[in-house]
Length: 413
Picture: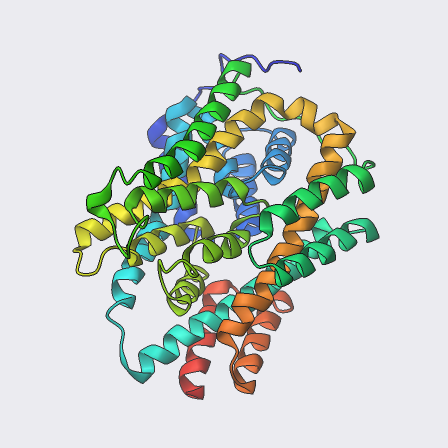
């Protein structure tokens, strides 16, 4: 493997500059990770010329082939190139804070919502989730399953997860093996720009990720933070962080795929009710920036009963950081190994198979819990279908679809 040596001239901007640009994107980038990439290309390549179109394309390819939130990883790597490690952190903070604060505020507000109108609003947000996840499945299937082999992988994994709701990891392994066997002809992609990340840095990032993935569950099991327990044994602040770390390390395909992973880890084990989970997911569709800020909502609604806003803010911040951290560490390691991954045909095939498995996992989630948890009447199905058509056919902005769907839900009830 060829080591990517540090680039002495990569740090050509300031941390404050990177934060300001990323904050502007975090306030205005609606529409999900694919739309975010379009915003980034316009701002970082065409308007500010922080990197060339070829370099930008190489970073996009890398971020789409590894676990984690692609748009957040892309922004952080651009910040790394522009202003070093401080720039990477500034890019993540600027892009993430607006929607994270909005989701935290919604969590505090949602707990106080009562009555028929509030119930209809929350139900409308669950119908938004139906429309958005359906669009994600449709769009991802067209992009990631363009041939019969990958479509077969996706359908097989979807059936597996429907029959065995906790089988997402098995489905990803099946996708990996199926891709190696069936998808060896995937074309090689371009390289990434030289960044200040070498082989030792990549190995260090992977080592830290492994320590966190193994250490946090062990600490939770030992009840190191027993005084912060909630809902019984194992439901502690560290236990929550372990769940979000594991989900963040397994999310191929963007923020929508985190839905089944987090739902299966949190709802059946009693961390929070299904309707509260889906209402927050629906609200996240109205926010700019990365969908992973859904974690800020989840952390806030899982605090111990009677806890004040300060405790809720702590749990929200821990959940947010825990979900984003694996993708950040994997992106750092990915820079160091990209040349091998991008040009080795077995690796390309395996990743193509994993992406197809992701489509299947998301399709299963569209059925259960998204559809089964939101659509209880014919009018619900009609509202969700209308939202899907508005998103997919007419390209209506997600924020407008959220508003229209919630209004329709209130009128219907």
